[in-house]
Structure formats: structure tokens, C-alpha cells
Amino acid sequence: MAKRGVFVVIEGLDRSGKSTQSQRLFEHLQEKTGKARLLKFPDRTTAIGKMIDGYLRSESDLDDRAIHLLFAANRWECAASIERDLLAGTSIVCDRYAFSGIAFSAAKVAVSKSSEGNEVRESILTYEWCKSPDTGLPAPDMVIFLDVTPEVARSRGGYGEERYEKEETQLRVKEQFRKIEQDVVKNFTGIEWWNLDASKSLDEISESIRNLVALPSDGVPANINKMWM
Ligand code: NYM
Ligand code: MG
Image (cartoon, rainbow, N blue to C red; front, top):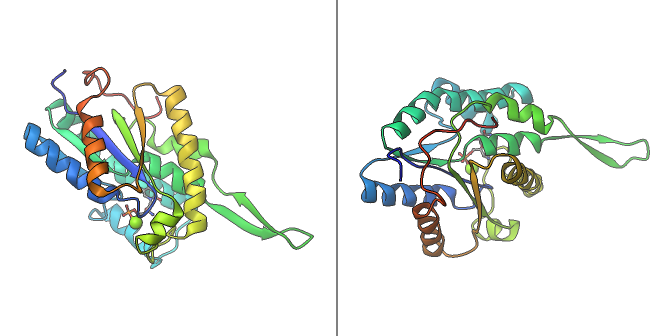
């Protein structure tokens, strides 16, 4: 296995258990290798992150394209340090990344009424447009998607108060994640995509994640791929 760290992204809908599992994987890698870093996007602590936080809490309104670019900029703020740490042998666990960026933005729809009075939903941003601002970011070695049904999410206390935390939105976001998965599997062989059933117990999921991360199919390649390139 090459010396560089492994870059693992944990993705999923809201309430899928990403944050708990990211924390656990981070602790596991820290214990095993002594060199691990936990990241979370959006990183609400930076100046850009504070703008994102205000938007998510509906304290501010922003144009759909503007907020999409802010989410991407929030990742670019970290890009150089991610590369540096990976090359220095530190493994990175990241709670959401560019995949959430596409899924939540491409899922946005404008609702209008047809001449017959039916509700019509039209996408606001295209999939390709949503991809472009993240192009060139360091790409992870693997994405672990925690797959949760709306029923399970509801049984965990339902969604919160933030923007996007509605069942109708989450279903559309899930469709976008499926599209991203197909795109990754077909076109970006440097990124392994795994789906895990997130309705299982926390311990079962942690164990599956540890097994996946212990066995990247061919070890960690020395180079770092670029997102969507
Ligand atoms: N989100 C997250 C986006 O819309 N675009 C992005 O690029 C990222 C990283 O922000 N509903 C959305 C997904 C979530 C929300 O994330 C906040 P979290 O993990 O609940 O703090
Ligand atoms: Mg959330």
C-alpha cells in the first residue's frame, strides 16, 4: 500500500447517520494509523460557511446559483490542505462533499400551475451545471452512501427545521444521488462507490464501513484524482 492517506467520503440524505459514522470511522483510523482528519461540509465556521449557515436556517435568501457556488467555494477553501494532508500520509474522513453539492442543487424545482390548473415542477439547475464548480477538487478514493428510506428517517425523529429537510425534497435528492452513483461508476473508476443499508444498527454499519475502508480494492494509489476529471 502506498504511503498516502486514504480519502473517504460519507454521503447520504439528512438523518442517515452520516455524522455519527464519520466520527466513528475517524476515531478508528486515528487509532489504527495515528494520522487521521475529520472534515464536514458545509464547514459553517469560515466566512463563506457562515453565509451558508444563514441560508440553511432561512435567515437569508440567496439566488440558487449563488448558494451553489458558495457550497463549492467552501470546499475549495479546504482543497489545498486536503491534498497536503493526504500526501503527508494522513487519512481523511469527510462528512458530505461535492456529491451532496450536486444532489441538493440539482433536486431544486420551480413549481407553477399549468393552464389546466395542475402543479408543474421544473428543474432549476441542470446536472452538468451543478457539477462544474467542483471540477478539479481532490477526489476521494471511496464514497460510502448511507441509504435510508423516508420511513426510517421519520422514525429517527423526522427532519428538522432547516431548508431541504422535507420528505418531498429528500426523495428528489435521493434520485439525484442515484444519478451521481451511475455517473461515478460508469465514468470515474478512481472513485469506489458503496451503498450501505442505513436502517441497520449503528454498530453493524460501523463494522461494514471499517471493513470497506480496510480493503480498498487495490490499495491506495499514489496519485490523487481530481473531481470530474
Ligand atoms: N448541502 C450540503 C447542500 O445543499 N450542498 C452542499 O454542497 C452540501 C455539502 O446542506 N441538508 C445541504 C445538505 C444538508 C445541508 O448539511 C446541511 P448538514 O450535514 O445537515 O450540516
Ligand atoms: Mg442536516
